[in-house]
Image (cartoon, rainbow, N blue to C red; front, side):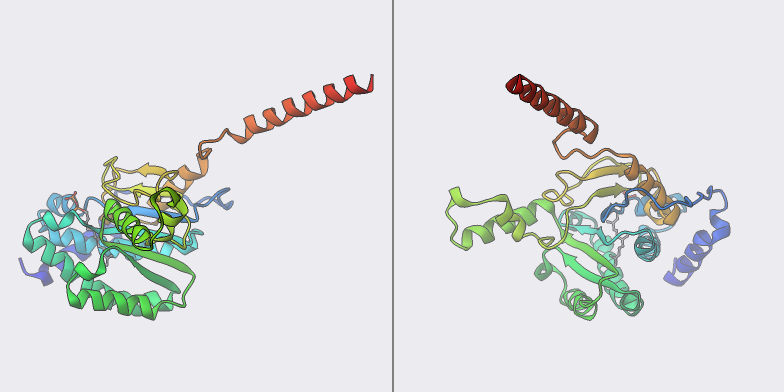
Length: 285
Ligand code: FPP
C-alpha cells in the first residue's frame, strides 16, 4: 500500500467522526488541586492500533506522532512544565530492520516538520539518550531542534531516543569514576548530576498506554517515587481528554515519599505537643 493512501486512511480514521464512539470527558470547572510538574509517557500500542485497522505498523507510528503533537499542545494548557516521552529504547534496535529504518525516517521527518511550530509554541526540546549511536542526519536534526528551542520555557519536552535507563545509570557511574572520585565518596547526588535529567525535577507521573504495566527500562533512576498510571487506550488514540483523566487520577494520590501521610504527621505533632505540655505542667507543679 502506498504511503499516500495509508496517510489518507489514517486521516479518515483519526478524524473526529472516526472517533464518535469515544465518550467526551467534561473538563472540571475548578482547577485541579494538584497538577504534576513533570509527566512522562511510555507511548505504547502504535503497532496494535495499525494492526487493528489492517494497516502496516508504520502507519501506527505516524498516527503516534500526531497524537504526541496534540499532547505537546495540551500539556502546558494543563499546567505541565516538563513532558518526557519514550520514543525509541536501546532495546528497540532489536525490531525488524525495516521497522527500525521507518522509525528513524519518521523521527528525522518529525523533528524537521514540527520544529517551527514547536519553537513558536514556546517548547524547549531536549534529547535523552546516546546521541552518537544515531544516524548522522538524525543527530543533526536533534542538535538543530535542541539549539533552535534552547531559550524556550513554556514546556520542556524531553525526547528519549536511543534511551535506556540502565545505560543512563551506567554512563553516569562511569563519568563519576572518570572524574576521580573514590568509590566510598560516590553519592546519589553525584550520579544524579550526570543524568540527562540533571537539572529537571523527577517525573511526578508516568503514564503508559496500551494497558501494559511495565517500566521497560524507562527513567529507572528518576522514577523512584513517581506515580504510575496505565490506560488501555492505544497511544494514537491518547488525547487531551485521556491526559486529563490521568491528571485527575494523579490528583487523588497521596504521596508520602517513604514518610508518613500529613494526617498522621499532624497526630504525631499533637502527641509531641501533648507530651511537651505534660512535661511543663509537671515541672511547674
Ligand atoms: C511503541 O509502540 C512505540 C514506539 C516504539 C515508537 C513511539 C514513537 C512515536 C509515537 C513517535 C514519536 C516521534 C517523535 C518525533 C518523538 P509499539 O510499536 O511497541 O506498539 P505495539 O506494542 O502495539 O506493537
